[in-house]
Amino acid sequence: MPHPTAPKQLLGVPAPVAGAMMRLAELVNMILRGGLNNSGTVTLTANAATTTLTDARIGFDSAIVLNPTTANAATALATTYILETGRLNGSVVITHANNAQTDRTFRWAVMG
Image (cartoon, rainbow, N blue to C red; front, side, top):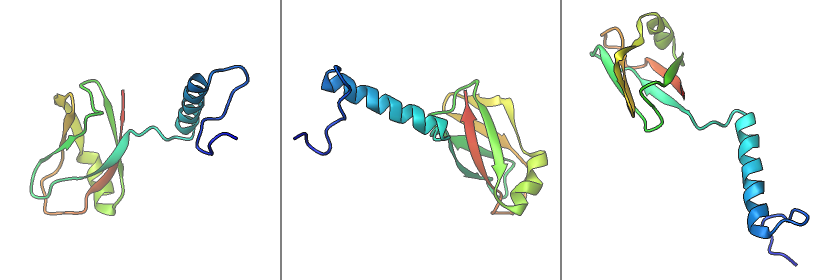
């Protein structure tokens, strides 16, 4: 009897290949359910006009989508942006209004 954690067998496919195929199918299903592992949260820096978002998944040509999670973040969205000059591989500089609010929190997603 196979071990309970052993990969399921596919008819006529060797176990190592079957295990890899099953893992690939699990990953595709996770992606189709929205599990892209491309998001996080960022809070705009109080008393500053910029905030640096650093993440290895960010590339120079990446699109960063910001989704406000607080009322102050929603208000700040109209004046919050990322300039082309603020883009690097691994980070972006978010430009925003300089004020003392500490709850301008956004969920972000990186694409590309």
